[in-house]
Length: 109
Image 1 (cartoon, one colour):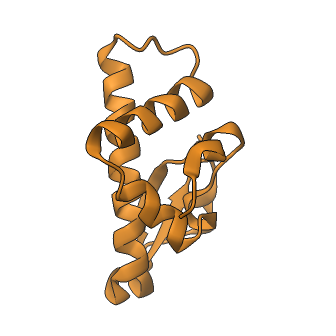
Image 2 (tube, helix red, strand yellow; image 1 turned 45 degrees about the vertical axis):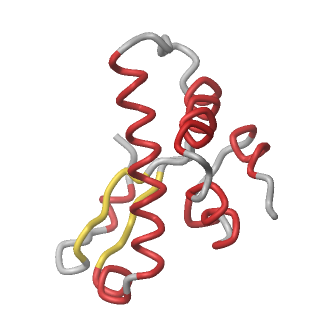
Image 3 (tube, rainbow, N blue to C red; image 1 turned 180 degrees about the horizontal axis):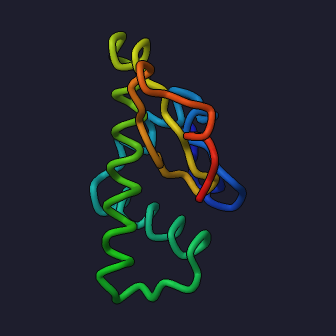
């Protein structure tokens, strides 16, 4: 079994995670998964206080991003027709239909 404990210690791009690691994280008990995301949020966003709505939104964004990544990898149509843009903090920033994708979509604003 892969231990995902050190993933939040360095920059993380979701597409770089192995399928096994992604599955391990998503199969954690919901409380354990939330704790995992909290550690990531505290590491990458230290100025956001844990007791705030912004921090809770960040945890939800992590949970959603990991599930979007799993869907992107496993759904042929999503994978073939969309381009996903990632942050270096483990989040999905955008999923763009390839009909409308432009190189400037990769620029971080």
